[in-house]
Length: 361
Image 1 (cartoon, rainbow, N blue to C red):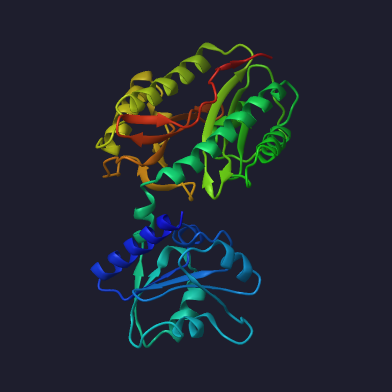
Image 2 (image 1 turned 90 degrees about the horizontal axis):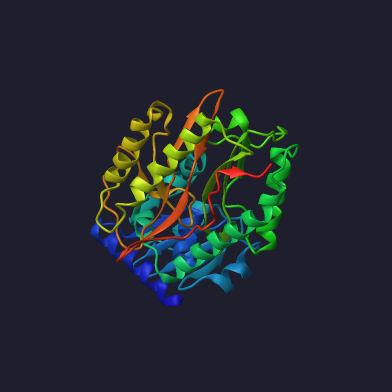
């Protein structure tokens, strides 16, 4: 395990040298976890060519000592030392300091920057995130475990999908079962809607009760060692109408069209186009969601983002979602989503929950 972290730290230092920077200040908790192993928050990582420093406080000091690989842990006295003053302890005079610009608010950065004015400050985005796009075998094990928990929890919860149950009640049941199976929490706020509300791609569960003939959309995930799964299934309770069946079949065919060309080297825009052609030919293309999927890992939504503006060719070790959807206001919608790793042979699906369109009422 420690070798993984050492390689990541060395890659960051090589990237800093290539950019002419002497240090990187990391604010994003997921980026910090990726580089150090620390699972808490209220921490800042500083990487120079000579030192690796994790700055935290008394609440997380012992945890950081136990979890971090290759970092010296420093507990800041927040009452007597500002963050900027603390960072200055470890920087050489007039350092070229890059900072993790996407993960700090303006107010805090203005305060910190005023105390680092003797250094040259440069905002950096994507440096760590680009490294995170390729998952190693240990990361894949965590992602597979998170996906398996989601699969099992859904299987245990499906018998509760009966007329009269509310969206909120089913969410509580599903999330309870995921955590009983070992999930550290929810990958994100569970999405569960019935009927016409399924046209909301990311709607929040309500007191709406399930009725015969309703569409059902369920989007959820588990977490293992910080790594997240993300799966969507769509159903109809009882017998589906002809229109509901057409919409579901169009989405299923669009997902399969993209997956049929998955392999290392394929351009993400090709996946987007293959899926969109199927949706357009179905007659429902105008109600399709604009993106096909995204990377997955410590973040729920990582690079690459698979849409019409994506200029990335898939590589071995990428973990992505493929999730086409159709959303018709005041009628309902369908989305199907699976987690997929790109392999030398093509791809492997990580989410295995069946996709029965019609549930017994």
